[in-house]
Image (cartoon, rainbow, N blue to C red; front, top):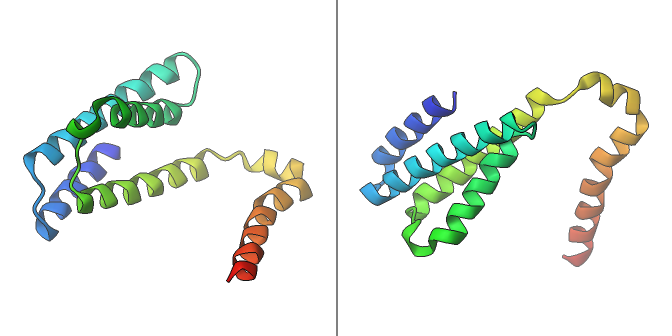
Length: 124
């Protein structure tokens, strides 16, 4: 699914704006590194998503200016990455554990958003 989404992203991005070969190579490097680190983290019993996130952060901070994505391509990658993270989180949720937690899970879900909304409304 991730590979198919990545190929679709590259094809869509090429139609909307020019993606340099360095951006495509950078994206390919990011995809390969995150896949391998996710697999490694899964082997040691940690969530694969954590390995993928750590590899992205490490590549960005260690390679610096050589790790470059065009701004439009970067926005598209971030949006699709966020959607993927939320989708994986939703699929992996244990519904029975949430039901057992009952009101606590409901409070922990809505209370932070409610406080943030009230704070932003008060600041505006």
